[in-house]
Amino acid sequence: MKKLIIPLLILAVVMAATSIIKRNKQYKTGGPAGTVAVSEDLYVEVTFGVKTEYIGPAEYDMTAMITAFEQSMAKKNIKGIVVVGFEPALVPIIDKAVDSSIPVVTVDADLPTSKRIAFVGTGNYQAGFKGGQKLAELIGSKGKVALMTKVGQSNLEERIRGYKDALAHYKDIEIVQIADTQSDSVVAAQVATAVLRK
Image (cartoon, rainbow, N blue to C red; front, side, top):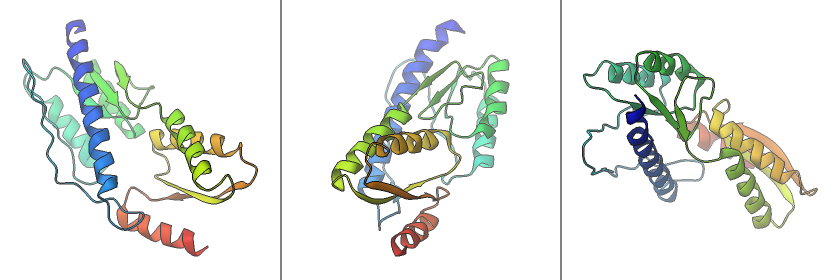
């Protein structure tokens, strides 16, 4: 199992970087404020000695994601799984995989209570803190702000904590709302509209 850890970590880093690049491109090509367009871009990793797959539901669907994870575990010659660890609901299936001698690496968001062997991703608190500082700069260190997120998702909760801590240094900035978008572009647009009307 130890000899599999390095290739799995390399794969996790590549997949995390691909995810970040893809997400940044989606934000740049998004539609109206508060929405994110789903990109049709294809990302391919060309490497040697391994076969990789990038699977999962097209929409935010935790049941479908767990099902895809279970189906992956059942494949012949599975040597490792990389998963975005943003929902505690994934902990049992991660633990099941590791107990079955399938190493799991979390990327982008971590589930430290799981048996995953490693985490590769952004320091989400620090990303939020830096984002909060930049937001303060952009609004001239004063004003009312709302933060839009998916409540309960660990990596986003860390970012919100970073934003709050950064903005706490500015006495003339008030966080008026932390809005839950439910990771749904329609809900996000409705929430953004409601916040702006307030």
